[in-house]
Image (tube, rainbow, N blue to C red):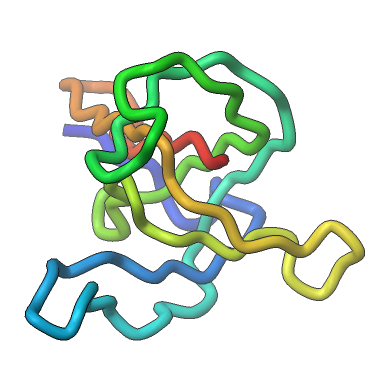
Length: 114
């Protein structure tokens, strides 16, 4: 299986994943810094896959598209900090993501942020 290589991903993002919930509330991972990514600021209508969202199952507008390696899989509700150190820096929640693993093509994970 071909995989996307780190050298093909020109941007860096920070990622924080929701691990689960406990009696005290949500349990999050620590921030994983400088994750190789391809980030594109564009609008797209996507279905909200966040189970706790008030818009769950509805079509909403995503404003940022992110591609990462399989090792950095982004599941809905993960937090992603993009455009660090610029005027566009922002932290967003993953609305929906897709895991692409096809023979002889660059495998990767795509995510759409709110």
